[in-house]
Image 1: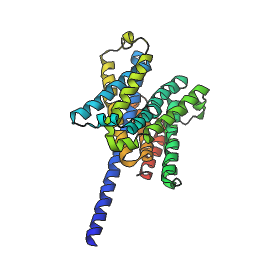
Image 2 (image 1 turned 60 degrees about the vertical axis):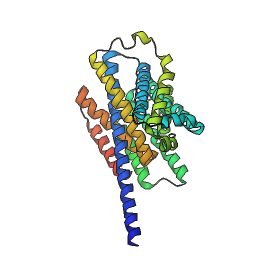
Image 3 (image 1 turned 90 degrees about the horizontal axis):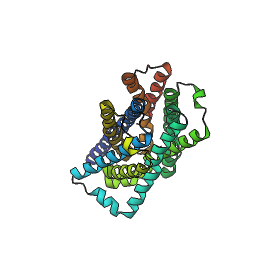
Image 4 (image 1 turned 90 degrees about the vertical axis):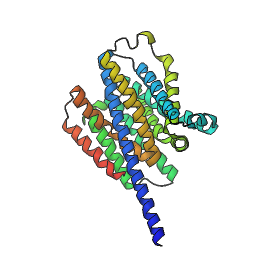
Length: 307
């Protein structure tokens, strides 16, 4: 009996530590996404670079980094994944219905509206993720999950709009692309779970990003002059965008999905507006407003509810 009790306690302790580790991964991924948005804003402001160039090049380079990581480890799972027909189908679903849909629709939503409105609409990914989690688990939403989602959405709204509902007046195209970005964000959290467990984060992200980057390359206008306006600071920021804002952010986010599940990871990644606002203040000189601080408080209050 004592041995069984000791085994049970050890199992619970291991599960607790994995939960904390998964939460740390999800929070780090969300924070680095916030850096990504700030870095892209800097590049747009400083050089006027085309968004499709940024999307294509960062995805190709980050995908290569993931595959190089696997090769350096002697990990053959990227090759094994390509030989598994069912895994390839899941990978293509994640690539098209998750990564590409989210990235492309988010850019189009920004063009049709503004970055704040697009971010609010994208945060609605929590709703389809929660619905899938309940359907798969054959259960109703837990009270703490509902409260956590309300706090996360409310905090995101306050930070990205300043609490002014008039900023949410949307043209039809902006609403459509914003909702598609939310569906793509849900796809990022839901579609890769099965193949992540079997083939790992590096293989799944590597092939998905490389595919998206190569598929969008033909749509980049004027490759010869695309980055002609980049100075040294732009190249440094772009390198950080690729390594930190793309490679590391997706590495941590997907590891969070693998360890604590889609719903918790999606909710914890709403730390992104906090990261983006803090970095904008320190880097670009944005001043915090009372609604920013209120949004921070709501998102921080959400975190223990999903722990």
